[in-house]
Amino acid sequence: MRLVEQVSASSIVAAPSPEDRGLAESLPFPFLALVGQTEMKTALVLGLINPAISGILLVGPRGTGKTTAVRSLVDLLPQVQRSSCPYGCMPEDVEIGGIDAVCPDCAKKYGERVPLTHPDHVRLIELPLNARLEDVVGGINERAAVHQRLLLQRGILALADQNLLYIDEINLLTDEIVDAILDAAAQGVCTVRRGPHAATYRARFVLIGSMNPEEGKLRPQILDRFGLRLMVHGLSDPAERLSAYRRVRDYLTNARAVIAAYAGDTLVARDEIAAARRLLPSVGLTPEAERAGLELVRRLQIDSLRAEITMFEAARALAAADARDSATAQDVRLVAPLAVRLRRSQFMIDYFTAQEHEEKEIGRALDELIPPLPSDGARPA
Image (cartoon, rainbow, N blue to C red; front, side, top):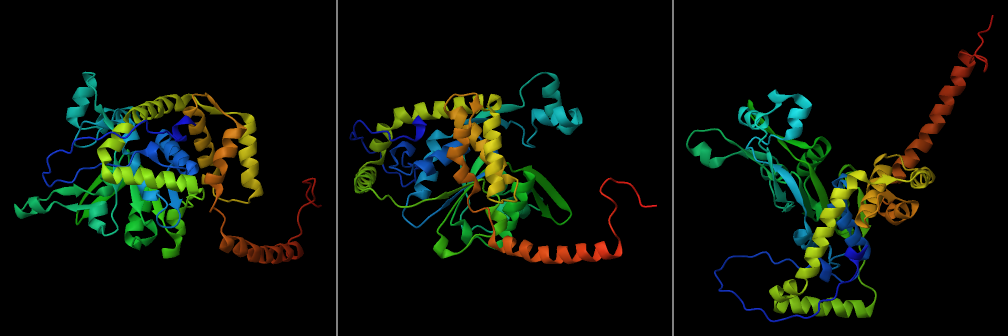
């Protein structure tokens, strides 16, 4: 894809520095200025095109650009339709559950054909390691509590609805927060409960995580929620490392100038991602692509159905990125390593191997006590 090819800045021009007001400003490193790491950039772009990929995990040592790459997605994020209602009412609620499934105000708007949603850019929501469970799930609004009023407040999971949820060093999260993320990722909603009161919010997000494996393992339950898994290595080409150093130096010297130098190409890339998202619903898979993907999963003895689901959805996203209406076996070949790695468990292989001995003993005992019927199905006289 052209989106992940190297884009050279034509020039880095000096930009005047605004008056320092002591406020922090978000100036992410341009995504198209990242050097090398084609596989990582491809996976991140595919996640923007097709949220059904469900998650992306970046595994690698420190200093390989994992966090920088994720945060640089900000300028490429497409638009989505968000609810204009404080209760989160959506048109599909009416289509599925009828007019009583939305609040009275939205029911009136729907009857008058007033839109219930408005376009808004996807956001990058970060979950810090020091977050409390109440920060993640939600809790009681403390200002309302001071005035003896009960108001449940949304947490990070609810804020991540239709957004990207990024967790750096995800392998260091506490178990209770991992459990909350797993529950929201599986159900697409997050429920806040405080005594007899409860509120349920939508929590449909693309989960992006990064980790350094030498700092600890990732629980199998959360690992299974990542559709694509990337092994991020350091740059091996000295020329690429020198180019990366020069771009970082320019960015540290004048971040606005670097961002401005890539602004034109960034806008083109964002438009192409939006076009790919619009094309995606009409993209299918060729029979050859389906057969190849299923046979690969069979040969690798992968049990989880998420392997082929992710593989096929990533292949469709890749075809949409290239403005094609059909994903081929070559598309499957390109994305398959991202979708099937880290899915086999040696523990489960050994467990099922040991279990086979018991199954054979059960079968022999049954054959002796209750002989099987003849193969033609006829009962003995």
